[in-house]
Amino acid sequence: MTKLYPGATGDWEAVIGLEIHAQVISEAKLFSGSATTFGAEPNTQVSFVCSAQPGMLPVINKECVRQAVRTGLAMGCEINLRSIFDRKNYFYADLPQGYQISQFKDPIVGEGEIAIELSDGSTKIIGVERLHLEQDAGKSMHDQHPTMTYVDLNRSGVALMEIVSKPDMSTPEEAAEYFKKIRSLVRYAGTCDGNMDQGSMRADVNVSVRRPGEELGTRTETKNVNSIRYVMQVVESEIRRQIDLIEDGGTVDQETRLFEVATGTTRTMRSKEEAHDYRYFPDPDLLPLEFSQEFVDELAAEMPELADAKKERFIADLHITPYNASVLVAEKENADYFETLLAVTVDKTGKPVSELGKLVSNWITSDLFGALKKLGKTISENPVSVENAAELLNLQVEGTISGRIAKEVFENMLESGKSPETIVDEKGLKQVSDTGAIEAMIDEILSVNADKVEEYRGGKDKLYGFFVGQVMKQTGGKANPQVVNQLLKPKLDG
Image 1: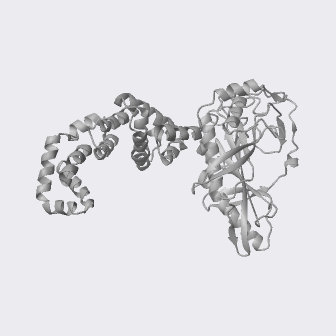
Image 2 (image 1 turned 90 degrees about the vertical axis):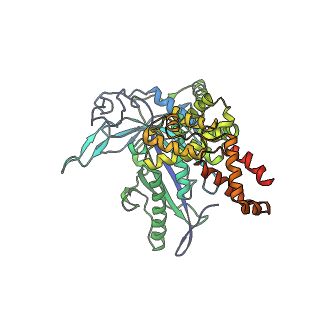
């Protein structure tokens, strides 16, 4: 059901579409051999082709084509065996050719559908209109000189995949979840690194409003939004601005806007050009791009397991909760770490993966992620090695330490960098499993608390936790919980 937004004169609904620009993972640019390394000195990764020197001709980079097809396969889209490169003509200082080589009517990837999961547990299907390959422009640098703008052409000619959605979204959450899903797909497929802070993934956000059921309203396009949170803010800001504008008697102009991070609002950048203003026409220096179905099939056979399939496998084969599975597959690095740690833990314990999946996933999503959040680190910056993490879990599995003690050991591992075995030995944290010693403690506790024993036997079952707590207190939390339960229950019930 489409969400309605209340206005002073009645309800409105929003229509949202995203154009996501994803930089292709490739060592060379789309039409030249120049490098694509991020952070290089300005104008050090520029060829005669990407600086538009006279007589220079573009040559297509096959790896970029492969990456675009792989992305299309990851999204479940139609792959077009024949596509055409067009010239999109416009003037800007950081576009040395005076045109951008892109694709217009005949893109490399056609229509498809993306399923997104929303916070209420529902699923929504968002249509994909197309994916086309194009070259990026350079970068204008306005902060290097008080009166002049410098131009860095390192990005000029870098391969981009523009992924255009259908206008199927109606809320900020849907736009955010769609953006996240596309980011996850390209990262799992290995076609774009998704580093939004480096500009390798960004979105143009299209928003319009209308009365429920009426024709589409005039849309605005907010350019180069490089954060999922900012995408949501752009949508929220534009919906409210457009509703207020129309209800005050104004009209929405079709225009390009920019997002102001400081205020969380958008501002006018320029009036929106229509497609015919770009004077698209097929690039005369490039033949139509054609490849065989066999080429596509080979790439499909090499595709890695994607997030949705991985999540289903984690739930079905490893008995992980749907929530934990979602957390683990949200980022490729998280899923990779989980599977590596699980494999090492299996080797250490000798237990099957089906028994250890839940333990390992709970430890990662709770203990490890909680600690990393406090430290302000990502999984790739994790200070605890996989080997030490597996050893910590093994100590739990074999009963050397309890779950509560494991948390204490883990905190110490983060501080000291020592192995869990060393910490357990140095601090005397081994779990007490001596049945004779534990039984003697239980007898003493029951004797001292005879009144509570009678209350328990009289139906006050909740007192069971009190007795367990007393045993743990006497052992400093080191009593084996299984042994305690095995010995305590019969004595209390007796």
